[in-house]
Amino acid sequence: MQNIFILVFILVLSSCSKTTKSANQTDRKIEQNYDVEVPVFSSDSAYSFVQKQVDFGPRVPNTKEHAACAEFLAEKLAQFGAEVTVQKADVRAFDGTILKAKNIIGSYNTDNETRILLFAHWDTRPWADYDANPDNHNTPILGANDGGSGVGVLLEAARQFGLKKPEVGIDIIFFDAEDYGAPDNFANQNTADSWCLGSQYWARNKHIPNYRAKYGILLDMVGASNAKFYREQISDYYAKYVVDKVWDKAAKLGFSNYFINQPGKTITDDHLYINQLAGIPSIDIIHQELHSETGFGSFWHTVNDTMDGIDKNTLNAVGTTLLHVVYNEK
Image (cartoon, rainbow, N blue to C red; front, side):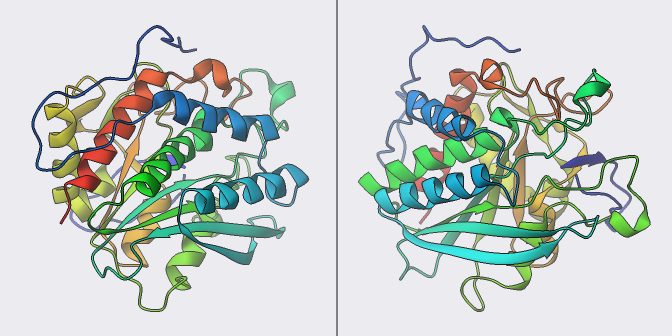
């Protein structure tokens, strides 16, 4: 994903996109009363799912590590009771490389027409092009946070859905080829849509013809210690009511120190194409650092995006909020 600024009224976008672990803090147990009984999100489980992805190494399309992780993700979704579809696609990268992409989809309550779409990207950046050391610029990143954290939270959510199904239908999509966008020294007007190739493909070729969802929630970089999730501006533009729903729920759960109810920047991410091409109102829960040079954490697109940067407390805040939103849908 890449950081850009929002224009007035009509959204015209031109480019796609160490922290301390608190091992002594257990998962937060919510004691407030809600409409339904919501399963307790396990941050230990989510953390283990992030670790498993990182253990494969960088998940760059067209590599054996990528293929092995794809198999793992599909197997986990099936193990957790989902109906699994692996959507294969040959997509062309900015430099002409044909990427053998796989969008991995897990569906629950498939006969229910009221559906919620939950998604994250599972591939990792082929180059650490924002690393402080130029010698690392051609080194693929491990992507513990950028890719791994969102998938880890959604795998734990899937585990819970398998144990207790929500009332609505759920589709989890792990999108591929999100992070293969053109580096700054290559980018031009012809590479504006070089990011988010997997979600672009799915939006034009849905796994179910005429697929619709009530709304979508994207998780991206949701594992850093003391992460700040501001109201991303594409999200507010297309799906303000969903942002309101999620941020209000987070506040009621005591997570307003993570979910900051203030405008953030505009991030071209997978949700852009789900909004514009698929017509599904979707939001992005994404860590932003508004005053940094990149708009993201110092780990972003560097060799430092490792498990050292993953905090179970942040995973818990995001995962618990997500489960409370989903299980209270009718």
